[in-house]
Amino acid sequence: MSNQHPPTENHPRYSTHPVSYMRRGTRLQGRRQTVWDTHADSYVIDVPREFTDTSVRSDYVFDPVEHFGREAELVVEIGSGLGEAVVHLAAQAPEKNFLAVEVYKPGLASTLGKIAGKKLSNVRVVEADAVHALERMLPAASVTELYLFFPDPWHKKRHHKRRLVRDSFVPIAARVLKPGGVWRLATDWSDYAEQMRDVLDRAPQFENPYAERASESSREEGLGGGWAPRYEGRVHTSFENKAHRAGRRVFDLEYVRR
Image (cartoon, rainbow, N blue to C red; front, side, top):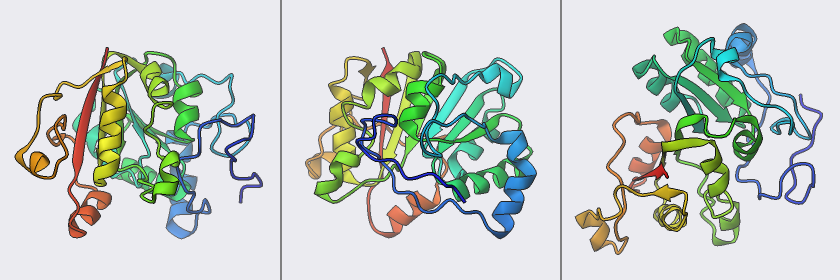
């Protein structure tokens, strides 16, 4: 059990970026604890902490060659959940390295089980806040693709300030992407999708290759254009299936680092 406290928005040693996630518990039990004990040494990046158990010390820099044992394109998923997407993608592209960033330790344990079950050697995981991972841990221009699939929507208006994708987060994400690198996003909340699109459309670091694309349904709903086709590499996760059952549409976005 962690003896550290949850981050606060104003703590000077943590971040001035409002926390964009709700921790759902960090204790491992039963099979997840066994999986963690068995596979953590092989797949978990043990980063030095600064304040909380999801922070990354400011002087730590991740070395992909050291941890993967090879040079290859690096793909990063922010908020990897139970690992469904990142493990599927890694299995489809063994020539690439994949890093899963997640704050929910039981979710990382589930990811470890999936990695081990498929006997993958090209996936690593880290328990870390997205801002710290991108702002500190990852070297500049080291990432070929960045994924953000179904982030916490914070759907109540008073909580919108906690949404990860906003103007202050764009340069943090842009910092790690190589020129020509791709940022793929997906959400099932239409107002968050519009926020993502509007924030990134005005960002000088990114270009939307689908800026002129507007589906008939988007026009009918008054949502305008700019939506990307569904990324074929993205497996249908439990989050997406839940959205479909609730009757919500899924929006995909794709932006290229200038």
